[in-house]
Length: 332
Image 1 (cartoon, rainbow, N blue to C red):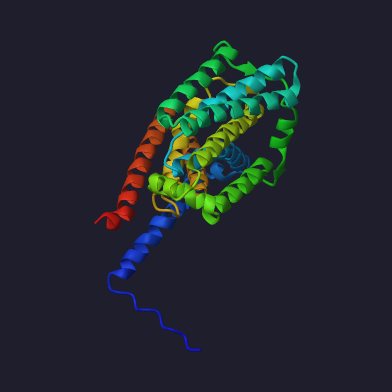
Image 2 (tube, rainbow, N blue to C red):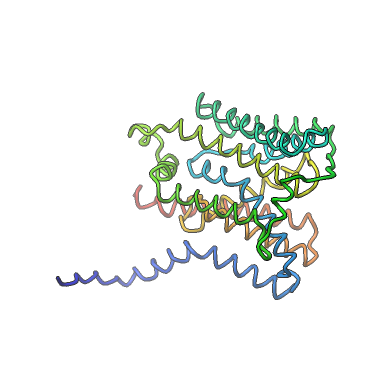
């Protein structure tokens, strides 16, 4: 047999190819560049203790944003994820403080995630109500209950139980929970990128009517995604209770911008405007590194908040640009 020669690249093909490669992998280069810059400016940035702390924070945040990534990839939204995490966090703290132990506390926190996941799923996927309005409402409900549990204040914990022991596991500077979350993301990547279920998620965002006409159970898929979002948010809240040794009713505030920013910025990695789990994981590491490095350089909290807001704006703009770029030929 003779090899069939590949057609030669045209004069304009190479620049387009380089541009596509940069769009797909440029964000990973940016993540590395940020860490190199901060490591050169502040050597303590790469101290073992700081690396361990950043990986711990990134792991919990990435867990919380996992369900959100898949929901946004499907063309929907969930802005209740951080409030569900806060409520689960407060339920765990209240039960442990009341003497119920970390086993019961953890089950209570998981119940919160399942309950709000089912509530969002039933209203959005079942009754087909607007996702943004519904999750704003359920998020407000969860946040209000979280504040009411502690009467507006935090709940201190004297022990962190088996959850604290789990967080204490480490392999060198790498927390054990980082390995677990990494495996979860690997599974999610396989589902999203290799299975038909994941392909349907992307198809739902592009043309839901066509997916429905093809006989795909769209509402059932959305139901599963919202329940997943509730559960992983609650798990993150449980881990935060042990990591902070307290229940914090307003902890969801900082995670709101970070979650949306991570998902949208992550959409610029690999998939060109499509939220994907690998991109989200890279964006979480980028955000944690950037904000940690900024703190080491003496930036104030308000200045870091400005950075958060600016990155969210950039993420939205880049995703809109990438989608218009990839869809443009199809509509011309």
